Length: 482
Ligand code: ARG
Image (cartoon, rainbow, N blue to C red; front, side, top):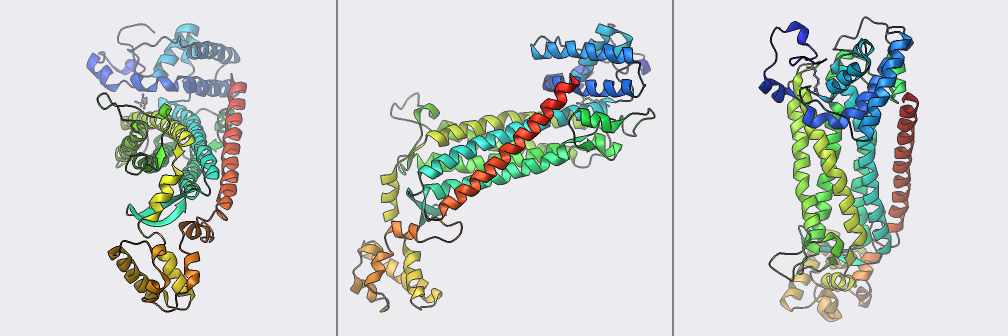
């Protein structure tokens, strides 16, 4: 396996590949993280070959033995990499053959790099998906804890960044929780389509050897072999699906972080980020900056970019393997490496943020957040809501002109606009009452938000059961393979 120009396909070539071509086509800078999965895939494949009598039991044993040694090197970080071998798959196969001779050269029987590479990537993506789910759960947990501590903490709710109606911090936080729940559900759903074995698709057409695809699929803990070998080597839907779910998660994080950023500004002062999650300024000594939240918000851009990257790479590609498919890796690895720390850091920020209750409550006094409640009051007394809306509009205009809040107007001032207003109006105007009375399902009242929390609890349990079940299934499969 020495020979300067030796490649996997050198038989057909009379001259060696140019250095520049090797450098241009190599994926070694990207795919080292697939090493473990490549060994596992080869373990399953070679076991199947021996079981089917396609290779001898002795060769099968030698391959298993060699692969185990390679795995040990991967695990202790001593795997030697030969840069002149274009990818991690070639490196491992050559290393094996160097170690055990001809038996190693038999490993690639009834297999192509086309099915090998995509099998490895699916194995990697399974773990990546579970890690992502885990990190989403961590953030959801932090959100739930803060929400249950702040079921009665009132802040102004905004639409168009204008004061709208008062809500509670718990209610607002749970809005973020349910976004993340959908993200987690998308990943769990995508996992069903991800956990399919392409191994045995070979180059594209299947193989003449009597292989057992069901066996390799179950050895690797997949749910089933893919039903079509051409699709098996072409399909990167699982990459696109992960990248979409991840991009949307990143967009959700950016929205949460946006609120953390501007609510922590001194103009709002609704919350203070823990020192541990903040940074300072090199010139302005007074500054405490929300850089972490800003970076999470900023990194959502790259996540969207990675999604566009893969969709554009896949667009118009003919079926079966095309080298373009090597380019699935940068996007997916980058998104995974970026998103999980973003989730963890956001969880840390949420867990340690301190809410300034007085400041938020004070902010609720301005901006007529109780105007809807006054309109509802009139409607309840029989005035059609559209009329009531108009009446309250006029009351608000009057209050602005006279620099008063609605609750500061006297009964006779109010009655100038509608004579159905009575003394009892003053019991519905305080913001606490506005919040407490919104008891509709999903509403902001502390009476009903606990319902969301218990829903959240069972969601979290379902997610962590899923992660535990799949992780232990993978671990069990891999343990019996090794
Ligand atoms: N490094 C390549 C990849 O990641 C390996 C597959 C090359 N296969 C081929 N038929 N040229 O996609």
